[in-house]
Structures are given as structure tokens and as C-alpha cells.
Image 1: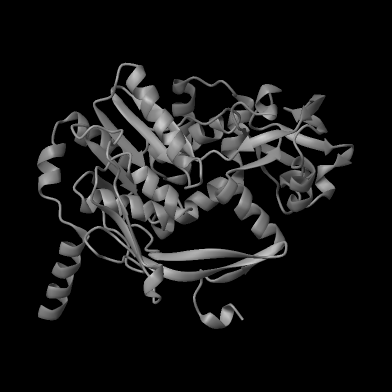
Image 2: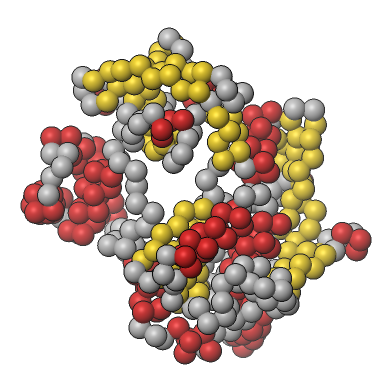
Length: 415
């Protein structure tokens, strides 16, 4: 029935999907042990069992306090081998009421195995990561839940207490969205008064307009650069569109996804459904559905040619980089660069790409850094704009989404 509507965002939510939505977006928390995990669908290379691998522990959770590390394998959960369990089975055993214990058998490296008993706690789904890049604050929003604005505010308070910040980078890349109310709250950290977003429905009584607050947390004299890409959708586009139309931020990266509709979620016993009820419009009264938001400055990552893609596939399937890192877990930069040059001669791939692949594999067994200034060209550009003092000149020349849309329509009519 929902498929017959012909609209991808109106859909039935099975019990598991409804549970995940409540935990990750609406509540923003769940009972569990605080581990990001992965599990291969089939046996690993060389016939190794498909055990659960820890991608990263969430800071401050039972798994993190127990010293579990990225790259550790969970061999057993309460005496059940994880190779025999599906991912849903694994999650069902790790999640549950706070206060209950879960017994794990952990394998680290090739020989070390040890038991760990974790007591489940209420785990807040991380939606904000932050760090300081010199004198520039960096905040990455992963999604928009009930806790996002509060955590972003805490990050800004921390920047202010630790010497202040002369510029701010708000990273919305690969942020699929979340709660409309959360997007408005985040926008209000930057905007004073004025329209943030308007919601327009076919039912006039459901129309609404959200406005900026009285006292934004980020001072007006702080340059703000927003990073977007094709993975920036929905609530993240509301924030990017509001800050752009209001002249409060300069956008860097790639055109956003283009999801300008609003969905309401309705329960059906343990399952439920979400259905599109309205469209949202930016402060300049533009709806970006299926259009997206263009950046003020487009910065693209290098694209692979067909030949490069073939070479990269061969390199990945050769397993040479994981084998090198396993044999040289603490290889200094000189040794890694020498190995990258060997791969360059063999596969004819970009040297910097090979260095990044090696570095990423090394980081697989540690908690990943908040940002990557060495290889992230979009982040590099954002930092450059703030540090070189060209932000204010650039922001003067930006156009609202309404201006851009009208210019595009005029150009299309002329052609």
C-alpha cells in the first residue's frame, strides 16, 4: 500500500526498524554495552570464521571502560559462538535492559583471548564529535536527534573555555538528517531572530514557521564555514540552507542530496509507518527537494578512472595493505612511505592515495581521529578560508538559494 504511493520516504516500518528509529533518532539512547561492530556475511579470507569485529567503542560506555579496542573480535556472547549468529541476533544479545550483565569472549591479535563481563547501561547515540584545529573550532554532526543541539552547545562551551576560537567549521557531510526540531535548535546556535525554516502542507492548519532565537551561542563576528556533500540530506539541508540564506555561513564541498520533505511517524502496535505530510522551505522560500543545495565553493575529491578502479580492486583483493600493517603495527612514516612507493610501482595508483589507505588500515585498530586534515581536501579548504582572512569578502558575494534558483530558471529560458 505504501509502495503504491510512489514516494520513497513514505513507508512501512517493521518492528526492528521502528525500534531502531525510536532508539537512534527520537530517544537518542538505548540499553547496551556501547560498541560499534561489524560482521561479514560469509567466511573471511583464508577460511577464517565470521566473528563479530569491534569497529570502535563509544567513549564512556561499559565497552570503552573495559578497555575493548577497535580490531578486537567477539568470539562468544554468553557462551554462544558469534560466527553462528546473524547481525540481528548479535545486537539482540548485546542490547537490553540497563543493569543486566553480558559475558563476552574477546580475541585480540592472533593468540590473546580473554573473558570480559559487561554490565549494560543507557547508551546515548553519538551525534556530535568535536575538536580544535589550532584556533578553529570543528564540530561534526552525525545526525539530528533529541540530544544533538545540547551536545553541540557543550562543544561550543568547551571551545570558549579553552582559549576561545576565531572561526568555526560545521561538518554536515554524510549527515542523513533526523528531527526537524533538532535542525531548528542547531540553527538557533548561529541565528538571531528571522526565519529558519517554514513547513508547508496541503492542509493549511499544519503550516508553520520556525524562527531564530534571541541569543545565538556563536557570536556574529565568528566566521562559520559549513561542509556539505551528496550525503547531506533533510535536517542537515535545513541547517545549511538557513545559514546560507541568512548570510551566516559559507558553504564548501559538493551539492547536497536534495530531500526537502517532512515525514511524520505513526505507531502500529510494535511496528509503524512514516508518511510525507509537508515540504520545508528555506528562509528565501525555496524548496530543495530533488534539487539539493549547491556549495558556495565546490571542492571535489579526485575521481578514479576506469583503470584506477581496476588497479584499486586488484590491490584490495591482494590483501597486501592489511598484511603489511599486521606485520608492522607501529611502522614509522618512513617505512609506510617506502611501502607506498612499492605499491605505486606495482599498481600505478596515486602515491597520496596509497599513503591514506595504509594510514586508514593502521587506524582500524585504534579509535579514529575526529578529523583528517592531511587528506581531507574539503576540510583543508575550509581551514584556508578562515585562516587567510578571506571569509568576509567571500560571504559578501554569496547568493541566496532563491537568487540561484531564479538565475538558473532565467538561463534555462534563454537557452
